[in-house]
Length: 96
Image 1 (cartoon, one colour):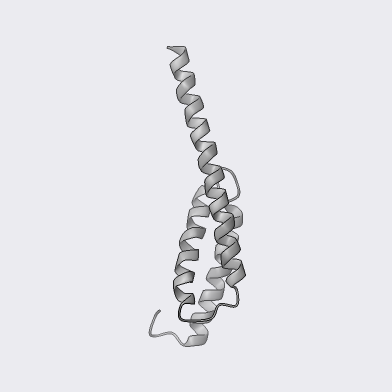
Image 2: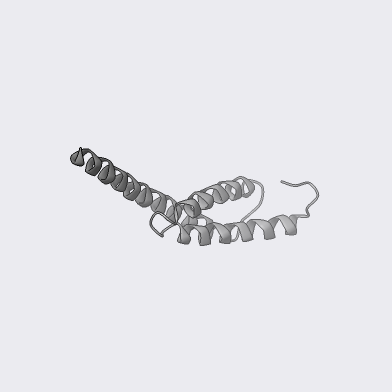
């Protein structure tokens, strides 16, 4: 935590970050395009979780759901990318 911030300021930042995590997680549900948003949501969620060790987070459900949704979006986008790359690769082999 930043020593220069008061406790209410730290809580406000934590609440905003939790809501940001949720929003990024929702954007992470967009296949392929949402992958960077999902990864950002996981990153922000990890940072907020560290802050929760010291302060109570009223927006914890937003962080938790943001991380869950982001993880799901990451898995789905990764599977789609793997299938697309395999399809292109195997298609190129068939033409040789």
